[in-house]
Image (tube, rainbow, N blue to C red):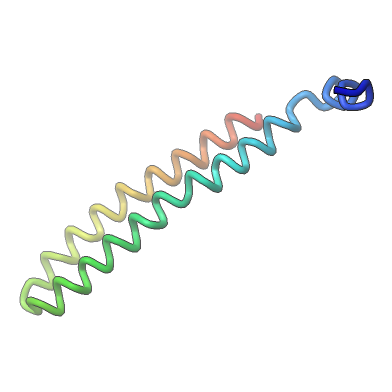
Length: 84
């Protein structure tokens, strides 16, 4: 590393960590996004196959949706802990 880069890191010690944390959170948000898509596509498929089960399927979908979103919010909190 050059002396300029080392001087910049000494002046702003958390900048590289903040950038890596932002990239990490962006990658971590992909999992919950795919999970939510899979949950509601399963509800649509299940409702199309058996319309009378719509209420039960939606109840399960909202419960699992909340669980998956908690994982995304946990990643958001970890992002701020890493940058703080």
